[in-house]
Amino acid sequence: MSAALERVNGPVWGAFFVVGASVLWGTTGTAATFAPTVSPLAIGAVAMGWGGILQALSAARPIVDFSALLRGQWPLVALGAAAVAAYPLAFYTSMHLAGVAVGTVVSIGSAPLVSAGIERVGDNRKFTRQWMVGALLGLAGAGLLCFAGGRPAGPEASAGPWAMPLGIVLGLVAGATYALYSWAAHRLIGRGVPSRAAMGTVFGLGGLLLMPVLAVTGSPLLGSWQNFAVGAYMALVPMFAGYVLFGCGLARVRASTATSLSLLETVVAAALAVLVVGERLPAPGWLGAALVVGSLFVLAPRPSSGTVNT
Image 1 (cartoon, rainbow, N blue to C red):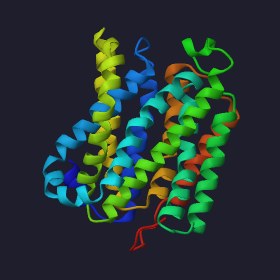
Image 2: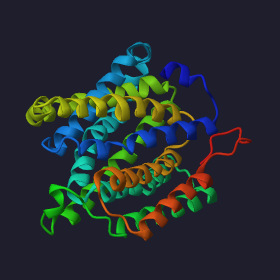
Image 3: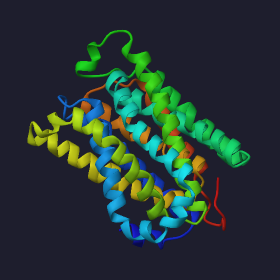
Image 4: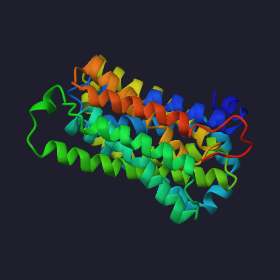
């Protein structure tokens, strides 16, 4: 699948791939609620851990072919892998403490600003007017989603007063690590590593780093068929398939554009949290969702563009 996707060129297709990945990612928080006895650490470890290892296995040939180039970029590979390992632990714990809607919005909503800052410092790239307008519109919508008062449902609804602030802090950590591994993978691709090899290496190593966490926390995943099915779905669909799409997108658009387009995940997550999980989202939250969707039209590359859009 990924080899065929790599033959489709152009920044518009890159945006399309990122949006497709975002829709898949938006299902993860709701899927996790179907395994309530599994800790968020175990959910994150099985999802990104096995999803990353599957990416590496599917990209074994290009990884071997470009192994010398990858070894020459080992600091970038190590940074990306460490960020991949940290991201799901912070992200799923954030959703567990603050609720699916708020946890996703904070995690994904903070990533575009961090990503743009990394590109400004690491790549000396200036912010374009199109990106600033789109990102501000999307972040305003994400902020409305976050502060509209959507409340967790289930066991976390009765957690202490510390749960929401801690969940938001962990969401910011998740956003920063998401931006870091997106930038690292995009930079590897920019230095001549194919997207399959770059994503397979970074996510495969990150997945291996998560295996000890899974070994310690993952026994409930084998406690029932439902828990096992949730773990398998998370690894195969949003993590493996989703990040194949995301890698193809990163090969065609900048990391700051990709993280901004992935704000769509917050809308999908919030909608599923209300419709499936039973969380409550008032009118300002839905207005925020509309703003995020509107930002996608600003951020999307134009068909006439012959270069990577920002």
